[in-house]
Structures are given as structure tokens and as C-alpha cells.
Length: 424
Image (cartoon, rainbow, N blue to C red):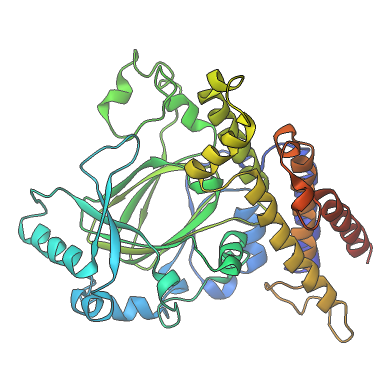
């Protein structure tokens, strides 16, 4: 990030005046297609798509050097089952049954990849049908167990990735996934975890995406307040079950070809169908542009938990703490861990500024990496969100005496750092 882009971004957030970035996006009737890597910069993506929080599709030229596009795919463009079996056959992978609805998702089982590929071959031979159902390998953490070297290269546009930076620092998990499945496999209607951004690259095959801008999903709720499992179902036309459906605009529809890369903005609900036998690489990520959305989502999640167990508020000792425990088990994170998430990223950005303060560093030489401008922007965004966190009544109920540094002290340090850095 260069200084001009940082100032542009800070002015953008200043102009929002506390409104959520995901709720302020221009109306769209199409999704932009980015064709040439040489003429599309990090600043172009940051200003044109990341800040406005709108989707785009990158051409296959952006991924043509990836090893997986050469080794995981046959010359005819199909999954190379022999290569996958030879290199990953014994790995146990999660597999969802697309033909069975479990709430608004699908039940999962685990099996060795070789068993899934055996099923896949039989599914193809059975004219894309099987008594076992339509099985979809989803959320395989390949990068957690294997090196990504020689498989893919992280696109520079998505390099500011706090979510995976944090989990890599803890060395326990990540939000990098492989999906693979036959024609007809699909992902039900959803918005991504923590209201993160995501990117998805088709290694082979095609996908159809149905995008709904933030807020549009409200028109799809049924009379009980629930969101649909499948936005293509005729049940949505039932005015008694879906009284709000009439004003809902049709989704933005995108067909993603092999090699192409889709940017999914924060808070956009979507549904995805595989039109061919398809393999894709997908990452969820959070950074300074959507961390406020993540914080808003966590507050909503806690409110939902509190409402669900409200009848025990007066009788359950330490009710508020139990709500945090339930929230973490349901959402994967609670207020305490969110603070530690902000703290780890903040400390790493402060370290960048400390190193960058040395002599001989030319302005703008950091490019799109974690140089001075990116670190300054990140610290400013963390400070703004942390200022909201520390005054939240449920955060104040936590025992922060064991936190190091104390949240208020970290906030003061960040605010002082931003003031000093932006005055240069």
C-alpha cells in the first residue's frame, strides 16, 4: 500500500461516519471482469472493489502459473484423479451430502480422499447419480497439513489477510480450503463466516454464483424469520411463507470458468452450483476493510445467544460468561478471543512501524506488503474497532485483569501511534 491509497482509504471510512462498510455499496447490474494482470494494481483492487465492497472476477491469466492448474488437471480439463490419489490419497477429508438438508446446511462425514474419488468415478459412470447421494468434498484444510508451495501462489490483492495471519501465529487452524465435487454439487445460501471476504479460484470446471448484496437477504426471510436453504426453490414464491419476497431483486449471476478467480465481498449472501466436475481453492479473510463488519456480526451472534437462553438469566450463575462460552462453540470465537485477535494483529503492525522507522527506507518502497502505510492503516482500523469493543457492556463484564496489555492501554498506544504516523 502506498501513502495515497492509505489516505484515500482513511477518508473513505471517515465518510462512512460509523455506518457499516458492508451496508454501503453502490447498486450493481453486473460484476466486473478483470482481464489483464499487468494493468491491474493492488491500489486498483483496493479502491475499486475492496473498499466499495463489491464483487469482481479475475481472468484465468492471474492463475496460469499455479502448479495445481498444471498437475491437478488432465489435458482435457478434467480432475486428474491419478495425480490426486498418488499425492493425497490417504488424507482424510470432509464430505457433505448435498441431497440432505440439515438446518440450512448439509451433514458431513469424513473419509480418505481415495474413497471419495472412488465414489466420484462411480457417480460419473452412473450418469451423475448414486444411491449414496450427491457428495461434495468441502472445507479440506490442505494448507494446514501440506505446504502450498508448488500448489498456488497467494494473489497479492488478498495479501492483507488478518484471519489466516492470526491462526498461523497460533499454529492451530486456518481458513484456507479445497472444494471438489462432480457436476450438480452445490453450496446452500449463506454469507461467509465472521462476515469475512473470500476468494475462490476454479482449478478446473465451472461454477454458477448467485449473489445478493448486503441487506437484500432480508427480503428472502420466511414468516418465521429464517433465511432460505435454496434460493432457487419454488417455495420462495409462496406469499404466505415468504411475505417479503416480492420486493427482492433478482441475484447477480456469475458463471466462473476454469482458472478464473472470484472476489466475494463481506456480508454478501450467495449460493454456488458446480456446473462441471470442479476443483476450487477458497480462502476466507478479514482485514482493516471489514473488521468492523466482523465486530458487528459478533455482537449480533451474542445477542442471539442471550435471547435464546434468556429464561435462565436470573437462575443461572455467571449467565453472561455462559453466553460467551455458547457463542464460541457456535461461532468459533467470542469477545475475549476477538480482543486477542485484534491484539496480535496490532502488535505485529506496531513491530512493522518500529522496523520501518530505521534509516534508508524510501517512501513507497513497501509495495503491497506490510510496509509503513499498510501498517498505519491497519492500526487505525484496529483502534476504531477496539474503541467500540472496550465500551461494550458485555466486554466490560469479562475479567480483563489477566489481559496483557490491558485493552485500554493497547487502545491508547494505537491511537498515539496513528497520530504520530499520520503526521509524518
